[in-house]
Length: 84
Image 1 (cartoon, rainbow, N blue to C red):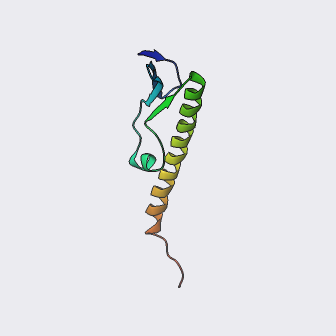
Image 2: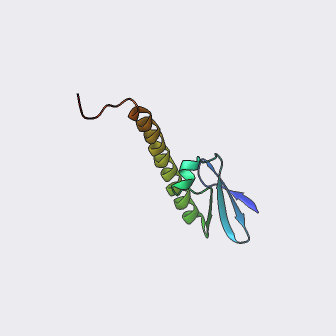
Image 3: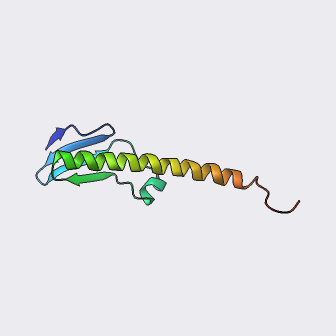
């Protein structure tokens, strides 16, 4: 196995079966439940870079949704609806 450059936030290596990249930082349960992957396999460096980039962007957006959910649910208890 040999280590190759991929992109920040990922550790990548060449194996007998192709290329593999794993995240350096852990994902939240929310990110995992919403499609973010901890590991990616690819056949060439271009494919690996594109998949890592897509997964990085997805994880960022899912983390934003997770923060939004947390802030919205925190406000829900204090909201009054209807009536006077």
